[in-house]
Image 1 (spheres, rainbow, N blue to C red):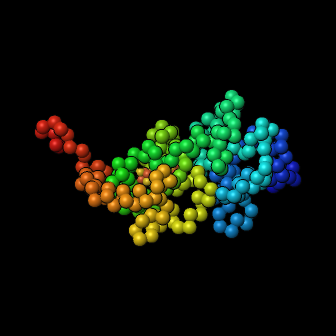
Image 2 (image 1 turned 135 degrees about the vertical axis):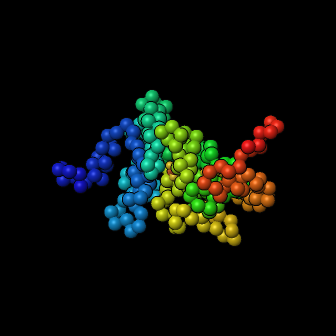
Image 3 (image 1 turned 90 degrees about the vertical axis):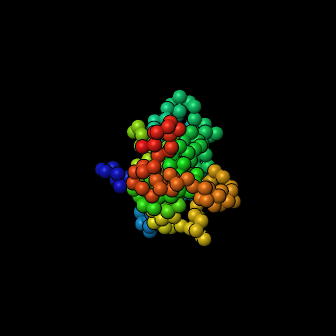
Length: 247
Ligand code: SF4
Ligand code: SF4
C-alpha cells in the first residue's frame, strides 16, 4: 500500500498510466517482474506490460500511453544510468516511436548489441581459453556461466561510470536485461552443458558454426592465452618484434 492514501501502488500506477504521455519501466522488476517475481512470487509481482517474457503484466498487453507507445522497458538489475537518460532524451525530443523498440519493447539503441561485443576477454573467447575461477583472466562462458553472448545490452561498449562493466570487473554477465534472468534454472556461476557443450550458445552466429569453430580454435590456442586464461594476472605478453625486447 502507498503511504497514507489507502491506495495500492498498483492502482495508483494504473490511474497515472492513463494520463501519461509515456510510461517507462525502469529496471528489470518494472519491465518483467525481475528478482521480485522469483520463487513462489507470493506478492504476484510482474512487469508493467510483461510477466516474464509473456505480454500482459499490470497494464495489459494492449496498453498504449497518450503518445501511442507501449510501456518502454529499460531493463537491468541495476539499470545502466545512461540507458535511462538517453531514453528520456529521445522521448522528450520526439525521437521515440514504436520502430525504435524491440520485441520486449526495449529501446533498440540499447539492445542492438550483445554484452559480449566489446568485452575485453574476446581474444580468450575466440580461442576458447577459459577461466576456471572468478579471479582468472580467461573467458567466463565455458565454466563460469557468462551469458554475454546471449544478453542484449551494450554494457561493454558503453561502460558504466567510466571503464566499468560486469565482465571487466571479473564477474560473468547473468543477462539481467533479459526477462526471466532471475531464475535461470542453475547457479549463476554455472554453465550448464550437454556432452561438454554449453546449452546457452551465442545468438549472433549459427549453433553449428560455434560448435565447429570451438573445437578448431581450442586446438590452435596460443600458449600465451592458454596460460594467461587461468592466471590472476598477465604472465605472458605478446612477443615484441624488437630484437632483445623479450623481458
Ligand atoms: S567473458 Fe562473457 S562477454 Fe566476455 S568474451 Fe567471454 S562470453 Fe563474451
Ligand atoms: S553485463 Fe550482463 S549482468 Fe551485467 S549489467 Fe550488463 S546485462 Fe546485466
